[in-house]
Length: 116
Length: 114
Image (tube, rainbow over all chains, first blue to last red):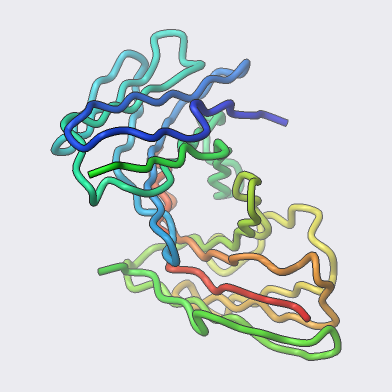
């Protein structure tokens, strides 16, 4: 089945630094989603991308849908302590809804730790 | 505040117990999902329900039994589980319309099988 390779697996940064992470695959994806999960909670949707080359921002977060449709990037600018958590990418390969199933493939996550 | 709620948030059960996890979505969505999240593994899709009909069973053992009585409620019935079933069980919902694939997650149930 499809797999997403998410990197880096973990990041240790200083408060105020910018953060970059990415997901790559050998398969073409039609949708990329980025989620953040904090301890004891479920993933929260941050950004959704639907077109190759699309660049979308949500506050200090910016995500891009790669031109090849096989990758996506998430950047966080000027990190703050509340950015700590695990960031997941998720992709959808099928352009059509098959029997209503919306199957997402998830990356393994990037754990972000911030030193104040 | 999340539009998807899950109860209980934590559950400890023995291998011979029977318990149920409950999920409710307040978003007016028509599809609901169960995922399993284990340490150091990507989220694993278990079941998909669309308009109350099960459309996906991702090779899940029969000791997990889902139930979707209506488009707002989803249950996961558990019986004779194994210690390796200990994990965070996440429910999600989405609106099946057009080509949007945004799934919204609940806070999860942390399950420990002893």
